[in-house]
Amino acid sequence: MEKNLILTASQVNQKIKRMAFEVYEHNFREKEVVFAGIEGQGYTLATLLARQLEEISDIKAKVVKIGIDKSAPLQSEIQLDAEPSSFKKKVVIVVDDVLNTGKTFAYALKPFLTVEVKKLEVAVLVNRSHSLFPIQPTYTGYGLSTTLTEHIEVILGKQAAVYLH
Image 1 (cartoon, helix red, strand yellow):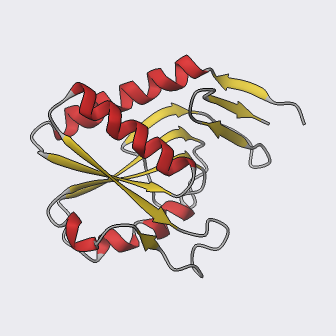
Image 2 (tube, helix red, strand yellow):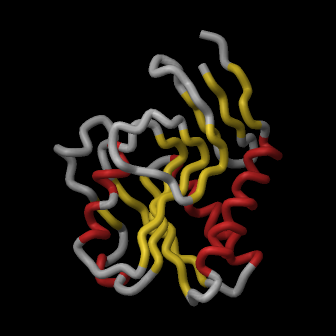
Image 3 (cartoon, one colour):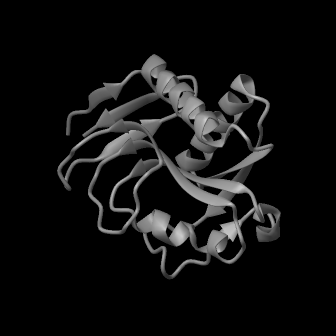
């Protein structure tokens, strides 16, 4: 199947910068924001957002990795590389590269519901709008209506790009 380029590297970087500004606008009174990235590209995106937020503001950005089996989120144990108590009274932004049905996000939020966080938000680079779960992103880099059979491929790093195939 043919790959169609949706976002170039410069466009991906511009989306990340804009999302970081939005995070700053919504949380400018905070001393620290926690970016909890879903393992894989979500964690990479969380790291990039955190770095960008620290460049444009005085807010300290902490990055946490969420380990979850995306193909069987209900059966998998959700792992965090930080103590849940460290999120108490903090703004937590759960990050992934693509929001498809919301299923992975719904299960990835579970550890943050066991501690009293100040605010829980969702950030995605690409929102496909196929909601089966009640997950709406607070921060979206790019909204794209696709068919269920189409696939979004996100590449982050030096050769950043978003493809549809």
